[in-house]
Length: 190
Image (cartoon, rainbow, N blue to C red):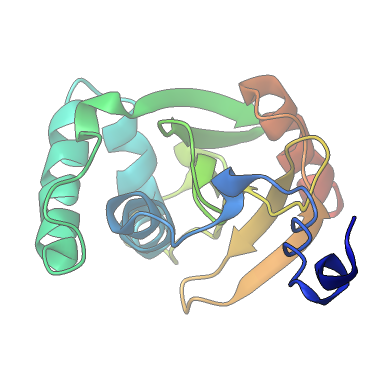
C-alpha cells in the first residue's frame, strides 16, 4: 500500500443482509382481492359469502370479483400475474363456527396474504334472512417483514370499516396452523 492509497475513496460497506423479497409494494391484485374485495363481501353478507364459496359457483363468484379488482388495479398493474382460478377455497370449521378460507398464490411482498378467512359467529341453521344479520370476523395471514432470519407471517383481523388489528407473529403458512390460530382468537367468543 502506497502513501496515496490512504487518500483513495474506500468502497462503501455492503448493507446488512436482508431479504430482497421483502422490498417493494404489494401487487395491487393480490392486496385488493384479499383486503378489500373478499373482506367487503364477507362482512357485508357473511351467509351469502360462506354459501357461495361452498357451492359449485365459487369459481364464478371469485372470477367476477377478480374482474372488478382488475378494473380497480388497471392503472397500477397492466396485467395480474395470477388469476381467480389460482385461488383455492377451503370450507372448514373453527371450533363450532363455519368458516371459508381462501388460499392465495404465494405472497411476494410484505402485507400480501397466504390465506384469508371469514368466520360466521352463528349456527347457519339458526339464522333467518328476516332476523338480525349474523356477526362475522375476517382474518388474514400475511407475509411479514424481516431484515434477516427465517420468513415471517403476521396474523391480522380486519373489520367492515377497514380497521386493522395486527396480532403479531403468525403461524406457519399452512391451512391447519392458520385455522388453529384463528380458533385461539375466537376462544373468548365460544
